[in-house]
Length: 530
Image (tube, rainbow, N blue to C red; front, side, top):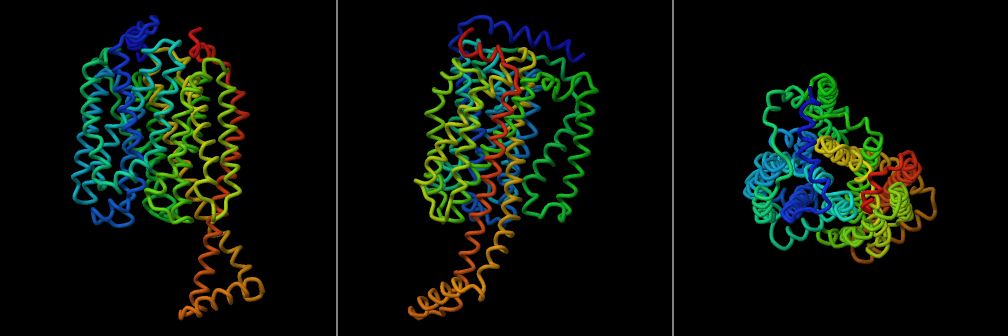
């Protein structure tokens, strides 16, 4: 039954692909869609550097403020896989323009929030509605453009998908410093209106299939929302709440299992499932999704780790962190056209191996870090990260989506984007847990050496105490506090090194895994108009 509706969708979308020339209105519509996606992905991270300002402005507690980001992520992760089905029912034009309008309205509401409860609700609305814009762009890129244009289009969406979360803290830090935290949301309004108007008037590459609403799987939607929403909550909050020692995490985990069981059962049983999982039967799509999942770990993990190091160890504020992190974004931006040219000349597997290898090299260089590392020491690892992400993303997009039949792409692009977001969520949960545990272990091990039986430690303590006493202070007490602080700092650094070692191993493994992919003829031809 599900297959009966697909030839219609396939026929509608496949027609324009045959022609090598893309109408100007579609090109403008596509650029408007790309900008909408940029706003939606940017807003995941734009608040991360400015949570303390929002917390002060709304009078929120330390445990409440994290929900400004978590509510957005939970809502977005539910909408992303759902968007393929919605696009089939109401058309890409209606879905995208209404998503852009809703996102703009929710941004305006978030700027007017007067307490933390309002902010959490508005951010959830913003995330849910904005999530509809992300997969639509990937689907449009692979349906309205012929394979010969893919070497231009694929780097563009790859750049937006990776650049937006990378520069989010930079943009957010600058806006909240120069103006106020309200501008983190107000900045979306004018571009949002422009994107809404352009997409509503110019998108014309598919037609709605309203008859599918009768067969819509509401139980599948509810179970998917419970499954993905609870999973995102457990991963986001687990480490802060000490995992299963907290009843909310236990309840969330039970909800994940129940939601997942019902969702997967419905996905394979009902004729028109809320998410079509058959795309995973395509070997290249399955491998592309696995690589996308791991890229999510690298992308969001390092966007989290670098600022954390700069704040905890170097004492940087949000603006200084943003200025330091800008290097990765610049490297991505400059690499995008090069990655496009490479994609038309190189086997995608070779490009992936280069990208994964470069990423592993960047994280390996971070294992030499000390407490004195600053902008210049972080320069090469950040450049390697930015360049490698772009070189990876272009072939991963082409491999995953470039060989699917047109009628499958809308659903598949939602699943593909979901894997990147889930990779980020899983990666951050694992990184946070390892950081917490390894810091404690390193602190205990280091403190064993900083005791009265160690002459070097005693000499250092006496010198520090004498120095503080000479300035009329309580030398011995301050010296012990300082020494404890030094041990804590070294424990942090050693735990950071552990994480970078793990990431190096993960990406080095992917270099080998890239060989398992079949040479994707359509993707290779996709670059060169073959």
